Length: 240
Image 1 (cartoon, rainbow, N blue to C red):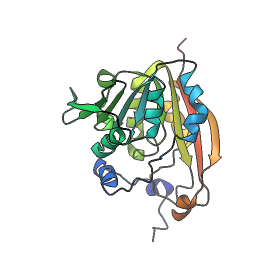
Image 2 (spheres, rainbow, N blue to C red):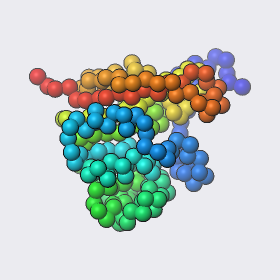
Image 3 (tube, rainbow, N blue to C red):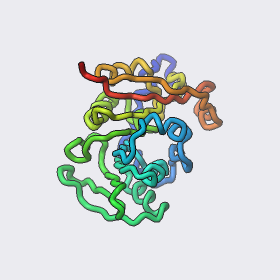
């Protein structure tokens, strides 16, 4: 039983470690992985591209997202980061993409897996270890499950990493979820719009593109009766 005095904030103070995420892959507890192109990405792709071609696109906590190959096949360059070596290698094997692997200069213990075609580079390390000096800056970011997966206490740190790798004309598509945080401890964690404003609003403009009812049997099993998915477009504010 939960403590009746437990606040929503306490409920969402659950800590998921890197080892926990690795274990999810090893035990195939990867309900967060989707086998199809995310409907939000398909619907709002043009919002990220902005009429541009051959973009550098970043996938935080990428796993083996099929969206990466979809965008790479369009001619974009893809960079992803995840702590799971298993997930990253499965991406290449499941799509029959030959790749090489090498150590990452400046990040002890990190490995980067690069497609032989050169347009997909997946880094196996902590998201907090990357920087523009390692992976460059990006024209687009697709964040389907990263902001909602990082521990709430690490959100500011995560947002600072994302801000550091946004090129001045970057179009950042961010998916968040909304539910009663008293009923579920996460992940995915509830990220209030007010917190997004606190994290990103000082330097970015934010636009809610769509909000849908995302309640399925999975969320009902968590004890939820309301569950919404939201997609935001985040862009750097032009400096006067």
